[in-house]
Image 1 (tube, rainbow, N blue to C red):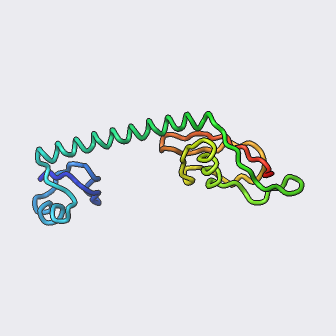
Image 2 (cartoon, rainbow, N blue to C red):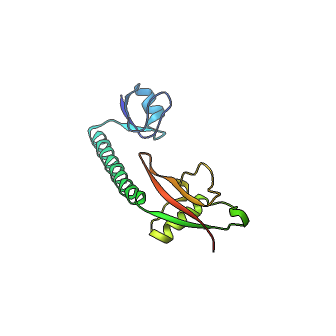
Length: 149
C-alpha cells in the first residue's frame, strides 16, 4: 500500500514522503496514529499543492531577508557605553543593546538572538557585527561604540 507520511517515521521516511508499506502495517499502525494517509489521487494532489505553497513562502522569506540585509549593510548605529578613567569601559555592549539602537535609530526591528556576537563589545571603537537574518543571508552592521556623555 502506498502511504503519504504526515510526520517523520523512524526507519520509514520523512514528512511528505510517499512510501510503500505492507497493508497490515499501514492499517494497524500508520493510519490509526495519523502518521500518514493513503496515497490516493486527491491526497497526492494536496501534497503537491502544499509543497508548492511551502516553496513559495520560503522564497518570499529569503527575498525579504536579502532586501533587509542590503539595507542593514548600508547603515550604522551608535551605542553609548559608560567609560571610566583611562578609557576603560564599565560593562559591555550586548546584542540586546544593538537591537534596541537599531530599532530606535533606523526603525528596523531585529531579534536580539539573530545578532551574532562572539564576545560582548567591551571597548570604544567601530565594530562590524554580523546579523543572521536567514540561513542563507547574513548582514554586517557597523556599530560605533562611544563614551556616554
